[in-house]
Every structure is written in structure tokens, then in C-alpha cells.
Image (cartoon, rainbow, N blue to C red; front, side, top):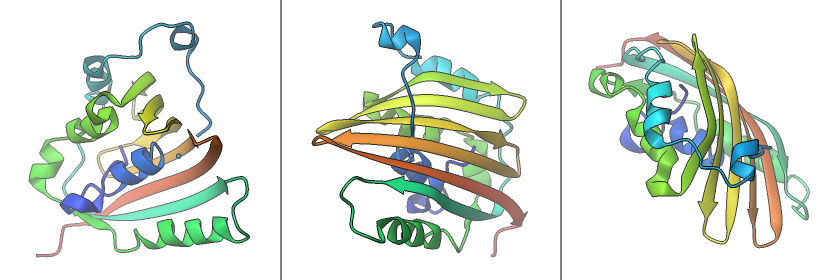
Length: 188
């Protein structure tokens, strides 16, 4: 998937797509079962779905982040451009995915999404490299909902994430697209 963030040297968009779009971004709605008081998807079931994805190949990756929309009632003029500039500029150098990191696949990303029980998948589907997910996170003073859709292969991904965060009586919505492509081996 496109969940890599720089903090550990390679997992660049997990924090972005899920924290910004969870974080990682959306206009998600609860599934009928969850809205009716049902239980969200268990982490084990989500792990089973993620295991259907191809293992990413190690190497150097380019990451293109596009903030498509950003809505925050009462935000100052130019807030979208500031957000776009900050997020798009933060990923211009790409990242190196080591063989060890690639071997772990998406388990760490799933753990990040779960965030010690703060986030749950209402829906997650992996079918032949196509990914669709809905998640809800409980945050201090609010909540965040995310819809994520796109494609993932061993050398690239193209994910669009829509998020909606509600806290302190205000709702912030963001849509972003994250594309990553393997460009070769990591520099020595």
C-alpha cells in the first residue's frame, strides 16, 4: 500500500495517509452494521486482507502527494495552499525501502492504523491489487473517519484518501492522493 513514513527512514505515508488521512484524510461513513451497533473489523481480519497484497520490493521510491481539497470552516485565506505546500513539499525526496522493511510487508502499517485500539476498520477489501478501506479513529476530543481507495503493486501504488476529523465542535475535511513508484535500488 502507500503507507510509508520517513520517521523510521522509510515508512513515509503511513503517518501521512493514516494520521493525516487518519492522517492519513475523508468523508467516510460507518457501515450499516457499525452504525447499528455492530462491531468493527477485527485487526486479525484486517491483517488477513492486507496479506493479500504483494510484498513491496526494496529500493528507492518516489512519492508524489497531492492535496486535492482541504476544508476548514473559519480557516484563514490561503489555508489550502499552505497545507498543500507543506504536505506536498515534505515528500519531494522520496524514500529508501530496505530489504528488511520490505520483508515485513504491511504489518507495521496495520499496527499504526490500529493505534492501540484507537482506530478500527469498518470495511477493508483487497482484490487483485485494488484496495478499499473505511476506518474510524477516536481522538482526544473528537474522531476521524477515512475512506481510502486505490491500487497497490510490489513496485507502486496510487491511493486516494478522504478524511473528516471532528473535534471541539469543528469539522476539517481533506482529500489527498498519494502515488509512489519504485525508481531503482537505494543509494549506498
